[in-house]
Length: 351
Ligand code: ADP
Ligand code: TRP
Image (cartoon, rainbow, N blue to C red; front, top):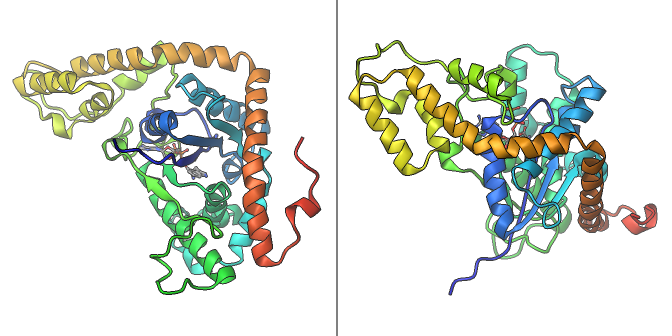
């Protein structure tokens, strides 16, 4: 019998609006699958949202909305650790320590930073530091696996690089091996792996580009029936007439349908596309039905959770206390390695 090693999985979502199908298939669903067999550490990345959000009430509400979405989708807060990033301020301390071993060249290569510069956007320092804070999120918990969509893979590579820089800076290069091939486990900072679900690495939005809050092309996970119908009907398709056969492989509606469908349902729809006399309107109705079936029960749970913000706050506070215990242990190693004061020396114990 083969035994799978229990890993620590960690991921975060920014509370910058309502979670959508891209977040769900790219990150939430794979993260919840991992949580069944492994240790799960998932958090609401409110500090990251601060690079763009300027409305405190909205940030608070969206933070609870992300927590409620994970819980409504099946995350068990007794088994997994769910918290709000800003409730564990140790992460900012590790961000600083990592900043001090990270060259400007590394952060200047980040896609988000390069895009913002190319578009002539007014950049704040938070945008430059974003990948360092994200590396701190991951390294502060000795994470093994990080389930994310494809757009986050570069950030994961940067986190691995920063762990290596830090380890080498304060422990020296490993004997008898290169920096890359040594196992750092149990030494200082653990190097994590990204986990990208190939089938949902990039979920397309209404216009066919990557579904993203910043492109305004999303379908929210918990949209009400009316909004859901409006959005699905707005998915862009080509102008092939109803009678003619259609190619499922190039159609956004089919790509989205495939995320929800069983292999049999998917093949049955593909047949209808190829057979002709089947319009995109029909395909959209089929998609709508599967989406309702998939998210309907979770939407009820989501509404119930959002009606009890105090209970959500309690769950997040409990998660933060558990996350903080791990964070303090790792920070103690970091402080000792750098010659800083001990965590125990400088902080009151967490209640
Ligand atoms: P957005 O681009 O809408 O702001 P986030 O940056 O908050 O989304 O993403 C949260 C998580 O969801 C990340 O792991 C990200 O990779 C994943 N994700 C977001 N959009 C998509 C998408 N269209 N396809 C696959 N994964 C996605
Ligand atoms: N940057 C991620 C995003 O935009 C969110 C995030 C913050 C994250 N910290 C993380 C994801 C740590 C995984 C691990 O989607």
